[in-house]
Length: 434
Image (cartoon, rainbow, N blue to C red):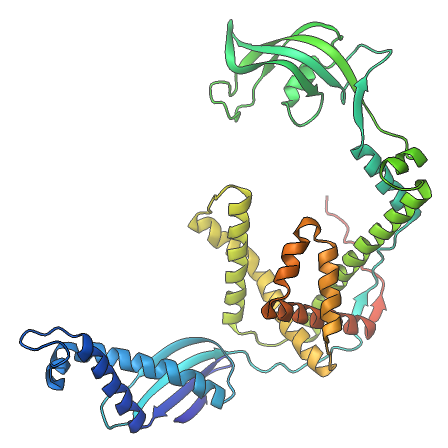
């Protein structure tokens, strides 16, 4: 096989490939043999039609199959021989196929030009602070207490306030007729909550419990029940019981209820959990800062096909998430195209950043061993909860371990850049224009 390479432009290489006549003739003979075994031609028994007859009936089909076979088999070898890493093949132009003659074709492939690092040490990276403070621990404890809140009967008050829970019967009327779906008994209505329309909460706020109370309200114009959309209705209610949300005190008893010895032990657990989360946030922020600085300091020509490939992956993921979240809903062609164009800058940034990190990892001789991979897997499993067993089985697959290996290389490379960066104060936010 003979291969000649021409650089068409920054991204396109043209390969001229010539295959020896012996190989070509062998492929043609094998194709005729395959066709002869299956061909049904009037006047000839199966497999007994002479070659010139097969040529008349199946010649163009055989030529097509042989050319595709020769190109499919030889192009990867030609690329490997010339050490060309093709992203995609743009065009293939075959020559004439004849027995006992060489066969030639040309192929244009897109490549990513070599990247020369301009600067990767001493990059200016903003200092980030995700330290855990006593205030953040107190806020988390308050959030935990709020999540443990319960509703209890109100004492010394009988007027409904925002945030109360009211046990009630109600029935809605459109004119003089009760409407479907507007009746309930012993319903627990959180005033100001998100379960009922705001107009409903406003209608009972200030009423006394126990007691009967009527109020008018207007359904929104876009209400899902079309027969009620924009309609003014009357609700008649029987208010039975008034409850208020009670948040437990953050003390030793609260800590014991959550399975800890005392409040100090709970605070230390919260501190550790917040510390892990802060470390993850710090790494994510530093990765963004590193990529921005690295891309700005190292401009290079980026192959369009790499961006398109990344966009295709992003769109597949977005569509899968949409279908999972919204019960199989699919976006229209115009919506998908708009989503694709909006995602293009991020796709380009991801590709540029990924290529530059690869070059930095080579320059800095970043290495990853089995211990690094195992530690990363254990960290992922510790956060996986009920999915840990399924993930653990998946991580035993060689390809999954290889994916973790690439992540470890990326993490180590980013940390190397951070360690060799110049820390600068965060930029002040630009004043808003009123």
